[in-house]
Length: 105
Image (cartoon, rainbow, N blue to C red):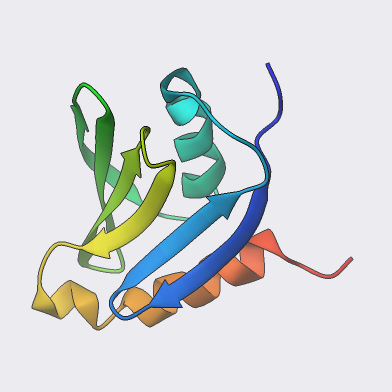
């Protein structure tokens, strides 16, 4: 299995988009979600939803509820918020992901 590496993380309106350096398969989603969620300390996974080409992981962080979304066919990965109150914390989540992904050594 090829190691999946993050190419970029972008804050776009109220979503956080994640692009990877290489093409990934639906079978890789488990490893990709672990890669991303380990960058978010003290989160709690609430629910997994698996579909034919989409997977979602609902989790809690800082009292807010977020969803990590994957769409295999479009090669899309993004974080979204569950509600308006959680949307306020999207920039905090973005900053945390950026800091924990692109640390200068």
